[in-house]
Length: 205
Image (cartoon, rainbow, N blue to C red; front, side, top):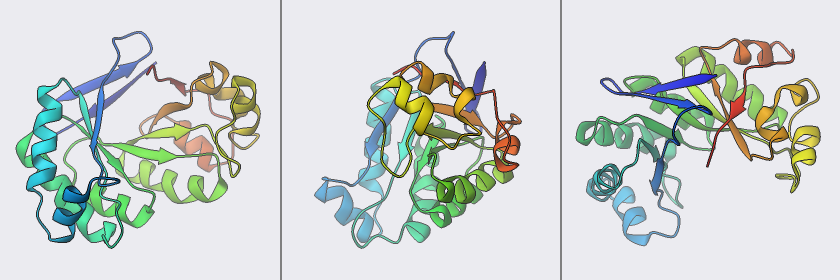
């Protein structure tokens, strides 16, 4: 099983039979005062510098997160995504807990994005999966419910997602905390329809 993530000019394939794909996650203002202040001021130089450093260090995909106190993610995430696309051609992972921010960023993204993330809570499934389907993106599926991520593989396969999904979570059964679901596969359609899905695979970390 393979999932392809792409920018306008570069494609990365994620699969349990291929080498590990490295996702850089330094573009996140949590605990980074300088980055948070720059975002609040409308300056993206710090973000772009981090993006270039991550690519230089070997990142295959760059995660972009602008969540910080006072930052309006819906208005800030899209231009940040555009700024990062302007300085590097690696695919991006759009990271936000706010569906409206995810959609705004997906609208301006060129390529097939990875979205971080969806989990087993019904609210998450109902708000994020339709975006994945509409924009043809892929999404990181977190094996957790309203009580968090179960500590064991058995718990992740039994309680991490609603019953209709449990049998298909190879990642959960393998003890992994997350899997990637592609919007181009029928898994999203079947999840939205309330059926079991069998095209989720383990992401090696």
